[in-house]
Image (tube, rainbow, N blue to C red):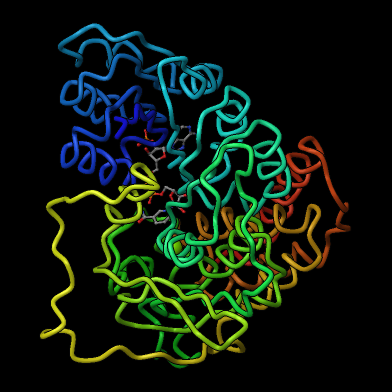
Amino acid sequence: MKRKRVVILGATGSIGESALKVACDIPERMEIAGLAANSNAEKLAAAANQTRAPFVCLVDKTKIDMLRNALDYKPRIFSGEVGLREIASLIDADMVLVAIVGTSGLRPALAAIEAGKDLAVASKEILVMAGEIVVREARANGVHILPVDSEHNAIFQCLEGKRSTSKSESLSLDVSDVRRIILTASGGPFRETPPKDFDSITPEQALKHPTWNMGPKITIDSATLFNKGLETIEAHWLFGVEMKRVEVVIHPQSIVHSMVEFADGSTLAQLSYSNMRFPIQYAVTWPDRVPNSLPPLDFSTLSKLEFFTPRYDDFPALNLARRAGETGGTLPAVMNAANEIAVAAFLDRQVRFPDIWRIVEEVMDRHMPVAHADLDAILGADQWARAQARECVEALKR
Ligand code: NDP
Ligand code: MG
């Protein structure tokens, strides 16, 4: 059993923290080869001091001295976006965990693939905006993409018996007898809130997720259901199934992390408590399963598991994502970028909660999608959508 040398991009975030705990928990299987963050020099230094990572990267060059002063050993330090790509391509690493919020993880992820590193992907945004390119490049370079998002990790586990572990067949899952992929969603804090109350939702209320403890952007996405919308497109690319075979069910307890229904009507599901250490560990140790300190399910206290149909009309994010995923090309990148701007504006109290859906829809309506777009076209559409969304924010400003 091999010890995997892992670079964590986004080491100071919520996923990054969970990944560091996994490394502490299974040191015989996971070693930290490198750590990267954007600007939080102190937290990055603390993680580096604890793990003795030989390579460290801080994108914000103005904080490099702060980082150096806070380190109690001498790792090699990278900085800037170039540094991020360098640490993602280290000779001394086997796997890169992409856990950067937003779209900044895309270029380093592609650099890691090009360098032949397996990719553990938490950053769903990069698969949404450039899934076709990421999957194609992974295949061309014979690297595996291991999903970390809990739903996709669950689906991966349900499909796994059908997957070859050979490098040359990376991502070639046999999904011919998969009837439906069923993503579970907690429903977020406003699962039962009537639409008439949506205008008065505050950032504080939206940041209180009922079952998961995550970074602010994904927490707001969970409240609007854009997170689940992004995840339908993520599943489409990761598992090579059409959007119409990817469905969503609300499951408030967040115990069943997703399901796969097969042609014979059998459904497989993966269950555990809601802790990202489960999917992160499995992405790292795959195809092995190893013991850890996490609590297994106690069925005597699990009194009920409920499942509901989403309120599609009240939470339009799922329909918008379906439209983006089915249209493809640059439209998913446009949806994702507009959503990022809208979420930031909501957190900044510039727009109301339901304006997030309005802004995204408006920007999608204005866009003329380009099919099978290359990276430049996708990044161009991303920038265009941000500018359009900022215009919408100005028009809606409170
Ligand atoms: P957080 O906001 O908690 O952390 C974001 C991390 O990304 C930080 O380490 C931050 O560094 C770093 N970062 C931000 N911008 C840049 C940049 N331009 N260059 C380099 N690093 C950057 O986010 P989460 O951990 O919650 O989420 C990370 C990703 O994982 C997201 O894509 C999310 O959708 C996905 N995900 C998260 C889950 C969760 O449970 N949290 C579950 C499933 C998926 P700094 O601290 O220096 O700013
Ligand atoms: Mg998820």
